[in-house]
Image (cartoon, rainbow, N blue to C red; front, side, top):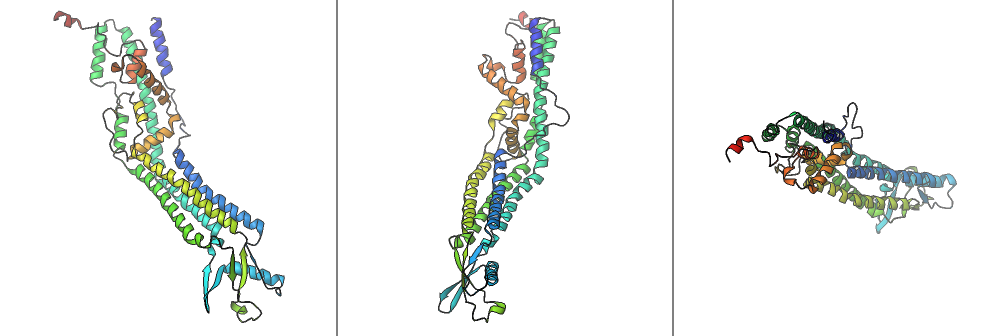
Length: 392
């Protein structure tokens, strides 16, 4: 065996990917990076603001301070604060003899509304986890495994071709057999391509993804409506008139009709309202961007894997409308690019392919590795069948 053939064998052996058996792909990402950011912000920010509201309430004591009459004792003043906080209704004169009431309950419900908002924003995450993740994980495991195996099969095929060429005493027979194998498409392994083509006709993953982001937009719109309808009307109201003349105190003459009270936590209420509006306003463009990514194919990822035999989704123009499960899978393959060991090798081969002088003879990784191993990717011009020489 010559040194050139030995070097070619070593080069091809090094190009083989390691066989990953047993528990693998534990770090498989089943959420896109932007989706994870949206999840943490949309769910975490209400919980953070809720903890701020509770902490401020516990540290400041009573959330309201009422100006009780001077003849009230300490216990009576405490009762006034408690009664006004329980009712939290503002009384105002709307005309002669007419009393208008306005409820200030959003102040009392602030922490619990934030908790409800966090739970509401977590519902799309639960939908994705239970409706899409099981099928998506099995698809990714199979596709990642097959992509790496297809690359390894191509390298082993070149190794086998090199051994046959070394053992063959007649180069004419070798090149005839090689051209016949290419014509009959022996080098192609169409299982993965057909599986991906089937995913173009499936829409379960993309429907779940669209539903998840649509629910986020719907819940965000509901948050705007809630803040605008209930918070805006009382956003600047720091004082309110409270009536405690109810029940046994309704006939007491020494009890005033209305008592002025002040909301001590109005600043927290304002900060929480403004923060919620700002946070979800920032999230809306991100959610819309996630939806628009489904309207185009990730052709760079596909173009790299066009180097594999029988993976010509682009060259054969098999890609149609991008709103299908295949496009979602491609997005998650891009997010899990670290698990695709073959991607880095094929990317390097694509770069080298652009610099070689025989681009027209190189279509797949088999052709390129054949060239690197010292074999021509196609039959040399100076080699013609002897039968052809008899009839010039």
